[in-house]
Image (cartoon, rainbow over all chains, first blue to last red):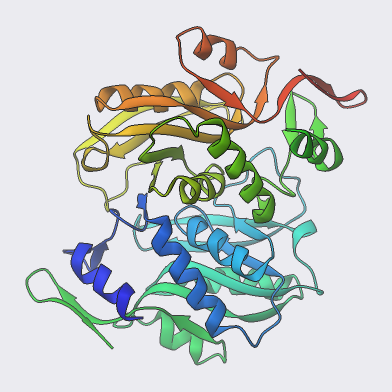
Length: 190
Length: 190
């Protein structure tokens, strides 16, 4: 998606350790007009599919997921990273290792919101090593729901997550796929 | 807002410890069509004001904040609860005690996204003791920005936050104000 790649090049900042800083428009300050365009693209890509639930993970996936859910006319579920006392015990769970925080956390979705009747599109801001996406896929499978596919804003295609997950037969649509990036050399797309 | 109060009565569940469980439509599964209506109401309430930034706090405020930001045609900033290595050191910060989690956490907003030129509307899902809102107000003040007001989806008016913050001269618009609630007696609005 040209407009999206242009924005990443213009405002994204490459930092050491393969960190792409996009907090001016994606995951701290959020350009919601842009999110609407990303959401419309996800709708176009999956327009042939029946989708009745969008699944994402807190926190930075929520904005794009909500915009996408409006396009599909369905609710969002955001998986939570810790167990709060507001969620009853009956949850699907998985463990996810965070690339950004170098830590492992528990992710949960209440069982009452996901079941065999659901056709799920997973939306997230980043796909790198694929840990979060693998966790969400496990939750969809544990629920007996149908996984329609995933929609990713930025895929770091030089990291193994995308290839790993596509090799399992999961449809993954990424609006920007970064082939390489460096602090001096800029960002190159697939 | 009648439609909103009706939904809270229909699908909200009162639990011991003054917990109102609204995770089927607000803070785990999210009814984005409903969020659009809440956002339109915030726009109506603040239609006389110039607003160029929506400020919220992760995670459950993000969905409503994004919908509201689309109504105002401006970006969202979501305050983060821990310091990640993706955020540079130059941040506004405050400490917030969580009612839900019974813990104190640090909240940060990168300085580059908030300054004296900004006219800020704070959006959040809940107002109870007011800790999160007080923290966000401190950040707006520290930035030298103009605080236009706050928009809250559900105010527990039997807890002190709303009164405390209004007494400081801050405009707080809550779409539902709960006067009392109990596990057996249901929910009563102001």
